[in-house]
Image (cartoon, rainbow, N blue to C red; front, side):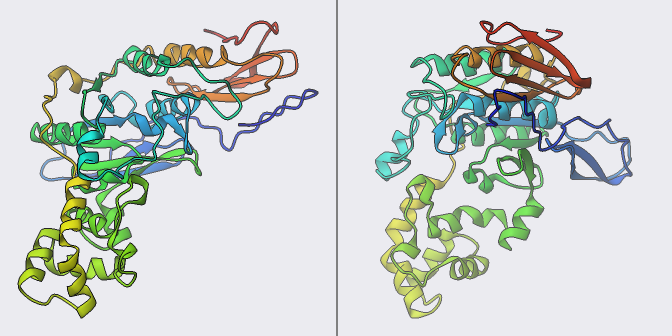
Length: 396
């Protein structure tokens, strides 16, 4: 958040995020489609198209993992949600179908019964919501309603299944969408979804340092880890996941790290194959052999905890896969920022924020000086308001 001096209005943008015009389509066999990121640079999504150039490209369905984007660092933040969802709609998903999924009440309990430390340290977003370090707390229970209402007003179906984590719901629905012949993009910073990556499943990840969403594909995964995504789950079972409270082998055997784990998985393919082999013969150096036999139970437990389930009782609806109507996006975003602004004490807090106009006209900024609220629209159009108004929306 930027501070605004009382004497002057200092507006600073890392980049002017205006969506470029749509490019022309490329050749047959391999076509490149541009996905516009928040810094106006183009991320190329390569799709191999066999046969005639008129062959229909597979539709893309986006799954939005809602909970992670409701955090700013480790603090729950509705401002963070507003920021990332505006970028997501305007620069990533556009009018493609989006299905939003929220963790259900008690969703972690199944895994906590297996491993009590699983996500034990995480704060619950919908129990204590703070809009930012400077802003007062929102009323308990309001956050769920705000997020859900906003998404539905943008024609996004919202799923929240009691007793189920969003990860498992998304994994289940991903298989159903793939069976229908479509491609999937999962919008989430959660590395659990890397186990789903394939030619037809990509991730798009919020990158706070770059102020943009960034696509993560099969090619990226292989370049980063030098192995197939099918080995990702097995690798994480061995290395553990500190963020989720899942202990790794290297905490017990310091010499058993990523390099050793990758070497073993490349040879044996999966954790199950590796443990089965270690049970009947020597698979490596003595410390490796001893580790795999001694901690086989712990490794299998990690697998149970980290593996995404595909058996949740939910069915994808045909209506969810239609192009999303975006006509209400700008109005919904304006209302969301108005709601956030209503929690700010006008005479004590100076602030600046913004969202990205869905119609591609540019960036909309809301700023407050000492005595006035100012709204800037493209082409330097300004609107002024009296101090007792929380926000003024030009052209609204």
